Image 1 (cartoon, rainbow, N blue to C red):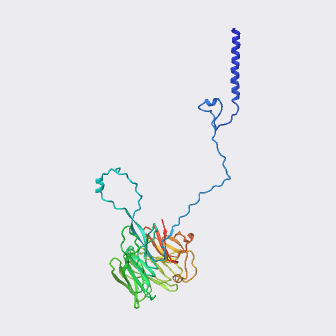
Image 2 (cartoon, helix red, strand yellow):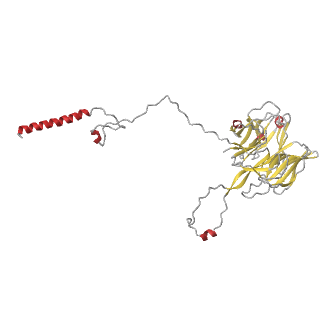
Length: 443
């Protein structure tokens, strides 16, 4: 090939190469369909670092027209629970031993424990673990039979089979191991009072329901009974002739000691503090009431309150405070050391209340409304029945908090005989409308 033809060939090949690259260059400026956000430029497929431009993340436009839907509110737990299935004459709260609920152990294959047959055979059996839990005992008004259950797990079980028909009032002593029942004799006039000792239970054997209650009788016409704070004794009032006598009885040895007598026969007693028994005249709307206190031996009888119409009282555990109401049902607190009274601003009866163990608060069944009438007479006669809310009231500040409104759960409660479990985890009371026993969880 001549030199001239060679030069022409080189020029033609060079132009052809330039044309191909030029075509590819101008074609790269067109926009290609996207594929999940990755570029389709031919050259870019070989560039591991991408281009210098950053691509902003894809965002969804905010929809301002949509409304915020809050999470559904948690349904409040009903902490008010009916305990008894029958009307009760009285109840007590005490501590009872029970077997602990333990998870079922996983079976262990023989030989994996590392113990030899000889060592297993000589090993002493381990007693089952137990615990003490708050329990209840209560008396069926119709039959006098005693029932019981634990407070945290209501499982009503009959404890006794001794029949005492139509028990009007019942008290427990000696930490639930003694029983006092009051009822009318067949003549429908004479009050008979039976004091019995309950048989001891075997651990885990509380399913027996035919235990026999043995005991003795107090003098006829016992008009009032109060139990000491430690439940080891009782104080009772009875009439003989024209006088009223007051006697203490020990549940531990059945020893009786007369410590009080009076020509006035209309007394109500309360054993609130360890060594203080109070005596208050029976209340009436148009009669001035009086309250006296004495020690457990019947000495140092002292007037505390007087000339208060419709007076009802309730002494504190420390013996320094007296909760009382008048014929308007207005609650006040009397300080025995300063002799001053503080009006609390609540209307109810002290017998619809119970003191907290620290004597700094009270738990009360407070009527939602009170219609005009003669109080407390109309309520005692059954002419008036209340619909209560349950309150906790701070004695120092006078502030109160509603802890339960039974009406919300469909219950009408006229609370009486309020009692607290020792650690104040539970509040118990009887509904005066039907005498059923209830529990309120305070935890």
